[in-house]
Amino acid sequence: MKALLLENIHPEAVRVLTEHGIEIETAHGALDEAELIGAVQDIDLLGIRSKTTVTRAVLDAAPRLLGVGAFCIGTNQIDLAAAAERGTVVFNAPFSNTRSVVELVVAEIISMARHLTDKNAKMHAGVWDKSAKGAHEVRGRTLGIVGYGNIGSQLSVVAEALGMRVIFYDVADKLALGNARRCSSLEELLREAETVSLHVDGRAGNAGLFGSEQFAMMRPRSLFLNLCRGIVVDHEALREHLESGHIAGAALDVFAEEPKAAGDPFVSSLQGIPNVILTPHVGGSTEEAQQDIGRFVAGKLSDFARAGTTTMSVNLPSVQADETPGRSRVLHVHHNVPGVLATVNGVLADARVNIESQSLATRGQLGYVVTDIGGRFDDALLDKLRSLPETVRLRVIG
Image 1: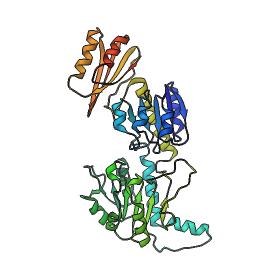
Image 2: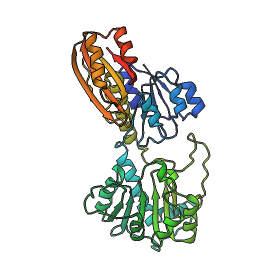
Image 3: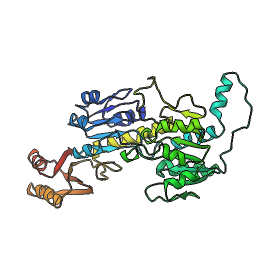
């Protein structure tokens, strides 16, 4: 098997995959669609981060592609539906960099509250500006968290430990941790919070979530942070509210358009504004997080390649399939219609195949069944299973 890893994925991923006999190719930066189409034609596993887009055209060009690993949290850069239609599994790392992002948020809140970036710039320019004017403690201040998922909820806990009062808003019902209080609307949160931090996903409906209307609702001289997705915020509107003084400071780690590779030029309408922190999408970029992401996602890809396990997949039904030496295993992704399992087992029974174990799960329009037998599946039997109208993809291990 061959794996292609892009965008400087941590060497831990190479170690995990290599240990399981998978041949590795790597590339330092992202590839555009045309480049990726040329690179994936004989690839079994693909590893990307946030800058590489896996489109339907890319998937069409990769008939051998079994799985895609997003070595990050987000998966909106992957056409999940197209991957599912081909039986190509997709994994991500929903938890591995959570702490790293939270620590950066906290550091930036304190930095803005104390105007540390401005003080630092003056010191480097030879100006000694010892003053308490405009500097505040974060203790006792109200933090509003928009999006109470893995990152938002952990930020809630850490912020409370610093003495902050936490409120949050999420479109889904979420359990409030500690003393955090859920707001009934985004408007309620914006009118009450002194600092607003965004932690929503990159779905199309969240594009432009924050614009002039939302900034105008925020309390005067409040702080604003976005470390989730660049498309969520209207930067021109943010600039206007920063320049007017309505927003006292902002920190942004993500941008709608980001340079393709390290060292490429970066341009933003927010450059040069006092008390604005701009970072190059490094929220999860700590050695600890990247190592854990590399180990986690590579392990998921390896487990699927070797055993067919889809636990924690973001697009296929979840089946835990442990390795079983001495058995042959058929992995059957199919359309989720009544009677499929009976049809599959009927084909096996007609071939006088004895099933030793079988696991089935469904998810939306797809089903996934893992069947083990003692001995081997012959080619004629596999051809019958592949020819079933319900079959999406069939693979054999052992």
